[in-house]
Length: 311
Image 1 (cartoon, one colour):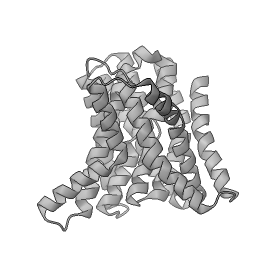
Image 2 (cartoon, helix red, strand yellow):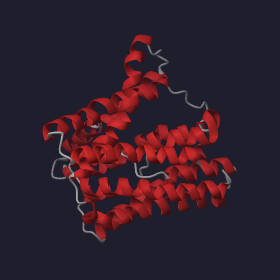
Image 3 (cartoon, helix red, strand yellow):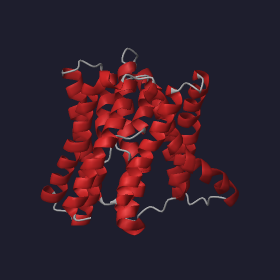
Image 4 (cartoon, rainbow, N blue to C red):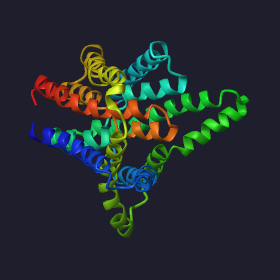
């Protein structure tokens, strides 16, 4: 349980650091803008390439594991999408961002150290399968919806072309694909390059969280609290409930896989959803507010899951 506390506090710590630095106004805006650009367009992609290049993937991909977790996630996305569209009257592209915020979790910076500390590297491998497909699946269909909506007046051929370009311009997805390709081709990671990539990988995610803190300092979080509460209910409560029921009672999976799926579903909203809002200039206040609220609430929801499964 102490490892859970330390993980949550470390995530909050970087966000609070960025928030305080921005609030006391000792860093000019042009510096924070450049810092944000470097974080999202250089550090994060390099970290993803490095991580997916070096990771050892399981030899067998568990179909039911993927079906239950991502099936539950897509159900939550659809609920979030149509709720924001019908109740909040959001545009289609904004609703896609809202749906993504309700189902995309902090699987890397929060999830990996959490799973490793509880299960160990070997037993955590099914979770690493989820990490591998997490961004590839959710980012791809979210990008298709956003790009398709924003280019809806174009011809079908031009629309398809712009959607493909939009996917390729997604630097996060691109970084994942490059890392997976290098891993699949079994191209060895040169030691000289590893010396360069390793420190970048270690600082990238904290830097992104600090960048998030910078942005939060300029937002009126309470003005967006009703949206954040809805997103947090979907992400922290409804998602793990649906995943648990499917894994435990519908597919009758082993207890450890049920635990992995339920915990992965209960992870707080991921900081990479803020990358999407940053890139598409959409719902930045809502997504930022939700990440903080969701992370705080996850302290209690994940603790309850650990108690439920006897960890």
